Amino acid sequence: MIKQIQDDAKATVQSIEGGSKEISEGRLVIDKALKALNEIATKVKKYLLM
Image (cartoon, rainbow, N blue to C red; front, side, top):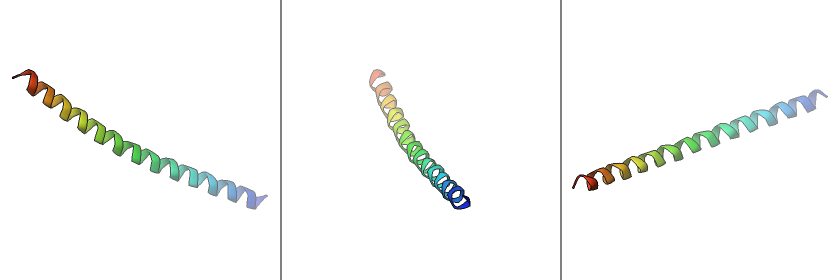
């Protein structure tokens, strides 16, 4: 029974660590997307002001 609890706890920790990694990677993707959108908005504004 103790072994099962330890295994379950280990699996839970691994799952949380995996989720944290995915969140970090997702955050990087969002940051890149925001940067690209800001660049697009800047170029559109410049074009409209011509």
